[in-house]
Length: 242
Ligand code: SF4
Image (cartoon, rainbow, N blue to C red):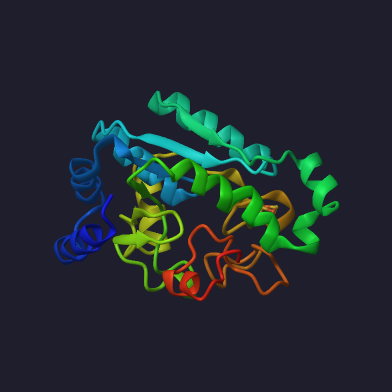
């Protein structure tokens, strides 16, 4: 794929679609990229919304999640529920290293000693490998989630994975997403009702006050992203293991 052509196309798409509903953005994106486009989800409410929207529109793209092997049992149960309800298969993308191989190579509980490396091995690299033969990936990233995401565009070039990144909910707020979930009676991770604003790997997720939508992830550390949604300016600074 020609990156220069993609950047021009991305600019034009953003001009046209900034104020469109996610359903329209997904439909347009499917016309542009077809089955070379995939949806990645961590099973947060934004991902559930997008799965519902794809299903209602019968857009037959592949859906995947990054299985770090450190996810909550509630997350796997939500995955199963979504698969059954929408009659879909959600691909499980795993790291090259098992947890025991990682411990042998880098020491026990790498998430404590070097969480950036742990995220890199268990999320960033598997994603890069998975996307290597794709043209575009759809995410649930929204501007209101964190300061690092507040410049998110609907269509972006993802320099790490060299694909177009599509964020149909970029201009949605948390309340908008929960209104949609409730209105359509969609399932969600029950841990949200137990004080978890956001849910990732077990060792790096805790209940928290909802000061920000990402509160409770890597608590007491200077880390708010695993690295798969790193802003392009950080990537250019060579900070791609964050
Ligand atoms: S979120 Fe924590 S456990 Fe999961 S990959 Fe990153 S550092 Fe490792």
